[in-house]
Each structure stands twice: as C-alpha cells, then as structure tokens.
Length: 570
Image (cartoon, rainbow, N blue to C red):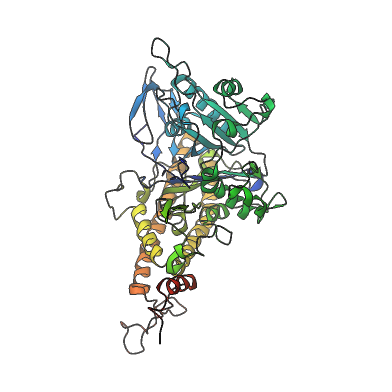
C-alpha cells in the first residue's frame, strides 16, 4: 500500500481542559432508514495539513511469502512489514469493490493506553482491511486479528464499518505497554467493542466515544475483545458488575471539552434528521449535556429519523454550522459583518484574564476531503458501490459520484495532482479552496449562490447515476462471458465517473469567475432574470450601479458600542 498522509486537526483546549481530539465527523444510515434501501455513511477528514485527494488501490494477487509495508497514516513513518494475503480487493477512497465502507473519528481516550511498540495505526487498519474484507463482520474480524498480531499504535478510535446490509460502530483503544525480559509488549492487542446499529435507525460519532454499556450475550448484534472488562478493572478504570461496564466511561470519560467540541456535532445531526426530536423527545432536552451541566445525560447511540433519508439529506447535514440552534455561530459579533459561521483557529482564546472557546460545527474550513459512501444491496457489487466524494469545506463544495469498482480516480481528485504546498490548476482541492476563500469574505451573500450550484450538481448527478446503473446492468446481462462483461462495465463506470467529475470541475471554475465579477470590491452587481449582469443602458461593458447592502445588524451594534460617539453622525 502506498504511503498515505492524513492528520485530522487537533481540537484545542477548552476552558483550560487538556482535551485532545481529531476533528472528523460521521453520520450513519441503515438501509431501513434510507429512502431507497441504501446504506449511507458520511465522513469528513478534517485537518489543517491534509490534501484532498481520492486514494485508489487496484486489486492484486501475491505470491506466497510476499510482504506488505505498513506506514503510519498520520505521519508517513514506516512501521514494519507484515505478510501479504494472496488476494486483495480494489479500493476507492474509504470503500472497496464489494461495497464495504470504512471510516473513522478519533476520540483519544487515555494516553497511557497507546501502544508505542505497535505496527497498526488506525489509518493502516482502514486501508488494509478494505483490501482484505468483503463484509462489515469480516472487517471487524480482520481489524481484531491485525491488532492482536501486530499491536495497535493509535489513540482511541470510533470506526464506522458498513456493507449493503449491516452497519456497525466499532470503538477501539490500545492496552498500553508492558515489556517482558525480551523487550516484547505482553499487552499487545487492543480493547474493542462493536455494536450493530438496528435497521431503520441512524447513528453518528464525532471524536468522542459513543458506546457505553452493551449486551455481552448477543453476538448477532454485539462483538467485543476478550477480557475487556477485566482489563478495565485491573487498570482501575472500572469496579462494578460486568453488565454495568461502559466502554466510553472506562476508556474515554466525557468532559466539557469532548461534549461541546465533539458530541455537540452528533446532537446537531440528530436534531436535523430527527426534525427536532430524538425518538419523540425534544432535542433541546439534551442541552444540559451539551452545555456540560449534566454529563450523565448522554446522547443515545442511535435514533430513528423523522423520515426516510437520501444521499442529499446526509450531504446537507455535513454542511451544518448549528444554524437556527442555540449554538448558531452567525448571531454574535464573532461572525463579523457578513454572518460568517466559522471561527479561525485556535479554538480557544483568552481575554481579560478569562478563557473562552469557539464552537466546532460539522462543517469546517480545514476539511481535506469529505464523502457519503453509498452501498446498494439490490445491485451487483460492481454497480452498487458509489462514493460521493468532495474536497475542502463541505458547506462551499459539492459531492460527485465515483463508482467504487472504477479503474482510477477522476483526474481532478487523483493522487499526485498537486499537494498542500504545490498548487495545481487541475486540482479540485485548490479550485474549491478558491471558492471557499471568496465566500469567507462575504459569506451571507456568496455562500447561498455556491450552495445552489452544489445542489444542482448533486441532484443532477443523482439522476444521471440512475440511468448509468441501468446501462451497466444491461451490459452485464448482454455479455455471456462474465469476465469480459466485468471489464467492460468497469471501464464504462470509470468513464461516467470521470465525466461527472469533469462537469463539476468546469462548473466550479465558472462559479469562481462569476463570484469575482459579481462581488468585486464589496459591491454586488445586479442581474437580469437570465443571470446576465445589468448594464447602464449605454455600454455593454459598464454595469448598472451595483448594490451595496452593507453589514449585518449585529456588526453595526458591536461597532456602535465599541466606538461610542466617534462615528456618530451629527
């Protein structure tokens, strides 16, 4: 496996609490909760250092004795070699050719449990498992085997692991280091638990451990590592009865920082998709937990959504900034004059001897890439798996579909097409960043235009995909030689993925130019119903006098209070 780099951003201290976390978010939809019977998993890989690109690894066959080099996903460090398996599966981002989806968020947990002698970090686990497993249950078994054999080298992780039929959350922490006389770690392995989300329900996680108590006698719906409770007892993390054991409370106790900076994003996703209720209970009843006033009032692991959900519904949740909730960032002076729902890092600040913090929403400026994985069990694997992929900030970008059986990633997302310090005018990451930087300057005016363009592309792509599905199915059925048919269909689906990505890229170039022309120098050019710009009536190159709507009322209030009489007109 080629070297992959991703470093999800560290969530800074909140009110002097030393909280560590990596700021990624997942929303999970079972097939019974989706409008078309799909399984859906969203993921944002958020970091100030990650470059947005779509990783692709082709399937392979390997001779006996072959080795696989393992690299740390966080920093690229070589960790060691492990035996390669005879056959590996093709992967496209966080999905594989069998419609397996595997994503993560980091919750940190107890620092003493990190195995510094281990080989398998969380990123290596994801991509190696995608190459070796066909189903969610197989994936859990592969992860458990890898960490048992080679040691788990990361902090605590929440994994979303899904196939066309089942969705699981698997949470894992290390066992720390205890060396024997030979210098071997006798604590090698990991503590983990995996819970299946009931069909018809949705779940989410965002850098805080979500699994509390679990049924230890239900292997159909709950799997866990051997000796997990006894390990916690011996370490002093737990002292009750087995049935009272809570994974989260033992290995990653909640505090104000993890709740407000992490679980608040879960609350927001549930609030949106439950339409203000969690299984009939008003979502606002959990504000005592979100505000850190009642940490025992934990969010449920899963809820039933208010209605059946679509890819577009989940994509839009990933664009959330707590709009129209008590945490809405557009409503205070920090939003500036244009209702900006972002706060630049660091996450905390000091003023007049007091410590304050900024909200952390699902959508964030430092996203490297984001996605909605779609597994469609009613279709053959070669057609059914689609990764709806995007780069940069979800609120100012869009998703485009890429079939996971494809032969390569679209050019604008391809590895090596630019990097975090090398600009490429063929890269979607740099293009979407251009548009985002424009929007951040006058957000309340520009962002709605960008979001309209995103909706048009995504809704149009959904229609195209349904047609491509039918073309691909007919191609499979019409060719008697299935090996030939498979290759033809892979090429067909790769071509369609490329076309849709290219269309998106061209649209965003036009959008970037349009925003520059329309909003230049703080003005807003007026437009005709057809979208063309209004002229002064004499020259085609001179616009009508542009509008100048000015700043938000909150900004005006703050400036008036700050400057007193100095700006008062007489």
